[in-house]
Image 1 (tube, rainbow, N blue to C red):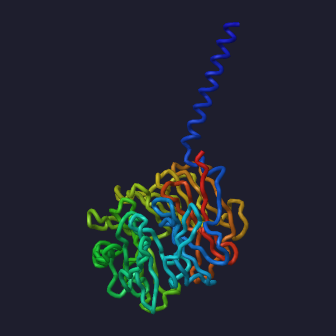
Image 2 (cartoon, rainbow, N blue to C red; image 1 turned 90 degrees about the vertical axis):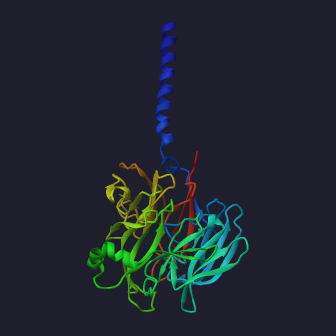
Image 3 (cartoon, rainbow, N blue to C red; image 1 turned 60 degrees about the vertical axis):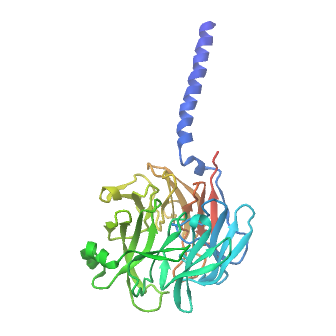
Length: 399
């Protein structure tokens, strides 16, 4: 009997130990909160309008998690609208800027949080002139910072945003500048001549004799680096056209070292890794900038068509959008994929499926552009199902 009791005790201990061992990987699995219990809903309940999050490289949720910023438009093509800030707790909305004319509904006004969430920056065209503007949320005051430029994406905790000349006709603004949203001061970072001096043959190979300018700069999480692409503009005034410019290449400038450190002749849809050392790119590629741009592929992850990937704040997950061809989807159906950056077969979850054939009828269509919140618990993305583009949020189950 004592032997049986002893054996039973050991069996219970073994079972508990096995259970603990089995549970440990599950508790450490970054995908676990996204595999079940995910809540998905539109951010706003106001009907008959577009609600658009700008891009997969900037989060519409404020750094403190209390508000959501989006572009709203009741115009069919979505190219004229307002900027709205919503209180996440109450759903109450506040319009901070009106009558904003945009290049397209693809990136809307490139609206973004800045200065720790105290301000919002964006670009727009008024009376035929492009400008970068900022709104102070405490005072409601709007200031125009610079003209004849557009805005890239800065760091939401910083007071500066990167600006560049209009890609179709940059005029004298062909290099990279930063503008301080608190003082309005403009700081040149580098000139286009420096880019030619470093990568002239590669530029010639891709663009020929057409002059190029900096386009679409994105600041790294540590604020020390910026990646961008190049644009060869048509020189005309028709910015709402696929012929406005040719844009390509991925280049990196290290602001601490004050030098260009990387160039790739192709731009798919790159995103910063939170370590600011690596760039994640379509195809599940990681480029290591501290090791000469060495590239490795994360194995086993899906490669949906139409991807706009970005990395979670802790660096453990990647989220992307993409067509569901090959993933059991119907024609025109897209999904939001959350993937384990350690890689491996089956290490992903599709958290939402939707038709992506409607939405704003802009000449350059809107895409989902998913991105994590600062705490990694929510993912924001656009849905183009029906006549209106809608901003959605998916929240995981932390339990």
